[in-house]
Image (cartoon, rainbow, N blue to C red; front, top):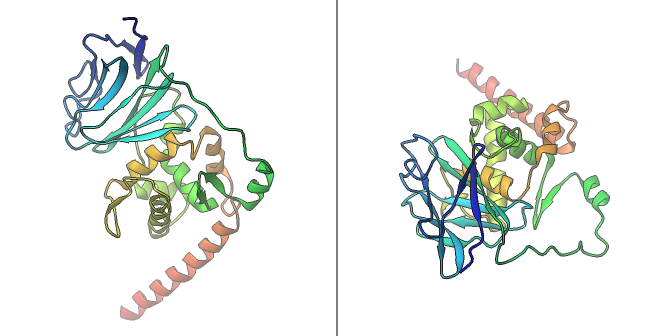
Length: 269
């Protein structure tokens, strides 16, 4: 049987996958990702079974996000799950503790190929831009929500190759945007709720509760679906208030709220 050549690329290194033995990825795998105690010794496995190449999650707690390079396909790989490597290039993201990793899988002759539909008739990109919303599927983000996602994804968007990065803390991201931490957390809640309501998994920890690792899942989703791209980094350097009416209004409201809190604290003193 003739097998398609499969290569895994991580931190600039290429690993050829043998159809006979497969390839393990983890703390002590064939691809030694990192000496990270939160990472499984063997987390992901690339293997050839029943005429197809697969990627499997053999861990017990961690999940992985698998997507194509155009952001048209995304799968959330739970422990015990596996999917076929059906496209020429796939990107895999996962988070262990404070660190998020990503690597690429290249399939020389995939069993399937991506087919993109033509834009719907009458769709006007310029008209959509005038509204000031970034749209992916059924989800539209306000300018402030887009800024928040860009700030969280900034370390990954600045990188030129697959590898390792840490998601900024909420305090660091808020400072990057010139926001208060309260404002940042409120908008993070709104973004996660909006995406969860649209069907994005991993952002809710239960009924009415947000997952504790929601920032990691949000970053993985945003990068894998091209919700934000390298070109959006310019938004972080725009003057405050230049991103749209939502930013101006929110800033004004926040000052009034902070003002009331200061008065109350002074009265108690």
